[in-house]
Image (cartoon, rainbow, N blue to C red):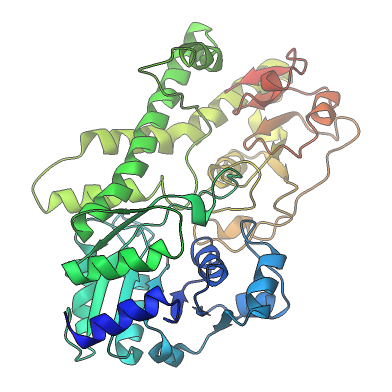
Length: 443
């Protein structure tokens, strides 16, 4: 062991190691605030000045982090934030929490990780542990991150260490938060593994070490592929059972009574969020380097990507049957546009694709979402940016149909029922609330 290793381990034990968290979004801000609450001095880094302005005002922009939690960490002098990345030289732990999206060709876009690594290399001091939390393909830590950090002219494994610990945040989940979710950790050397385990042991309740950074990266990919494939399965079953006149939700609820051998997954209008629609394709891309195909993953992606088209097809059928005017002349209200219930998160939301498809068919489209007052800037849907949520009408409001895309708990479903127009329900929202089903068409 080197003297710098011993010093960093001592500083971790004493909560004296300053933690720098790069990327103060849905992953980074909860990690920064939790680390500060557990006693580490923390500096958050982000290029987005609006986030700095919110934090300066004591206002959280992430539901999982309260204003009070930020205020408490600041009052204890354990948390600050900046856009000045030269301050990384004062951090002994640097955690990377930046996006890893796909390109338009469904290939990994590691540009955020690469740019961040270059900035770290320009500023980090000897004796630093760098941890990547961004989801990526197996091999990224050793093949991409470490070589860029080595351009600092510091020696990997001696002057700095590199580790991977996948984020496991679940926006809107009230049962789990950063500190209570078990943390997978791995270092690219045994020393790095010990350091990363020691750091997170001071932040979360349970640390789960694995043998290598590639294994840790594979753990995260596997978790998301598991969900993507199973959701694709029930989405396909929904289409089949709909054709047979069978309620897929009733089928799943019945199957879920079996106390072993079955885990319920539920269908929807498509996949959203920052993980499940994206991460499986990282493994698909990597597998090609080994001349291997990923048929399950690609088939699941194809099924899930096509679900919005299926839902719009069901809407067309409903409009034809109930109004006779055709979808191109219809006025549709979409209820819920975030990617999952009870959160404002719009990343990869299938509601945007639904809206786009309906508009392309000539329909007039409005939306109602108490969590999303206005559609934010989005790379894939520039024509929809700026549209504002409308209130639910007291009568039909001139709408020909309602499409329930996201079933927030705060939505007044009785008011929707009172509109007395057809409802295309992709979330089984009416049945689960025992509301009248006469006008409801499941999709």
